[in-house]
Length: 456
Image (cartoon, rainbow, N blue to C red):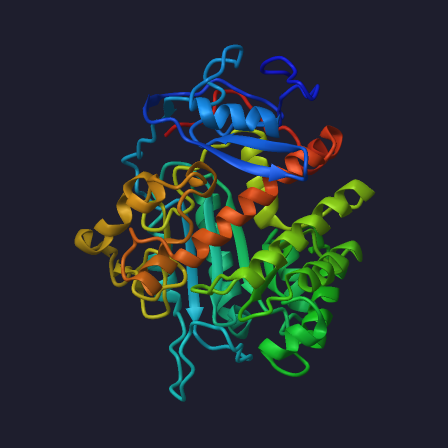
């Protein structure tokens, strides 16, 4: 789809988005176009206000840079737009998703885990606290979305199964669904556990850091073999289609490419359906990681061209948002519909807990509105640095808990995460320019679109 005529090199600019749609509510703003070089011959002009990406020649890029305005013939509003989506926050802060942190107890001692490792016996959630936490859901007919977290939640499988059945009965009484999730290292998965998770339709995140060596280095000798046995049991129970392998890197080199390859291989074997791989919270960013991200994105593109499914959710969601103009006002629902309850009954804005305590669930639910206040407006546009960043509408501002822990405030973005996100967006734009359209559609199929892109 050309946006103006060919230049002297014979190149017709074309839009990389798979669809350009009308936006909802907008507001006036300054034009904001970012440029990314593709090989020797072309440049991508990316409009931060519209998420429209246009591949142009280097000569056309020079003309744009000099003119600093829309050249005659460009489709109005595609580049140098002076309007951006206007994001409003819903006043609804009722519980829509609840994570139950059963205990800090874990059978592994991962090097990068944020949970304190001491000799004290951590408390374990009781039935009474779980019952009180479940009452946080409003009686409005929406699904009860419940996750189990730790520590290692399967160390307390008896309590997990009890809470699951409690929630199932509560949902049936109200004629709605209970939807369950668990994050686990999978080392304690027995055939009985696997069948229970399958019976109740659990989605599952299994912590796996890639190759056996990388996994055991972070989690302890023999942990990979135990995790692999757990995956096999989950597979036999019919859970594999609902499993995402969650890898974490820390330190340099990050071995991103080796981790992605190993995790995708487990998926190729039918043991899982997706791959999530990200740095540990607060991780540094530098030129070494910059090169690793580029290599990983090249691997992703090569695998996609070969016809094999390239799995890396971090990249996939970024690519999808650009291709289909999916604006993100926030990447975080902490304290605004998403809550976590710890083993002693404290309510947290985030499942990572840290300093996000905002109330107590037992003996009755009490939210401290002063403590919750810092989480209520978590749009990127409420953060000065984010509102000036050209990747803002793709990123949404990243993890607020990470900001609080490492930067001292929910509204302060973490510099390393920002640099990583901008690098990823650049590489995704190159993929959008170099992968065939049919490949892009296979990776990022058209969403179910019944309304214009959300602006609130």
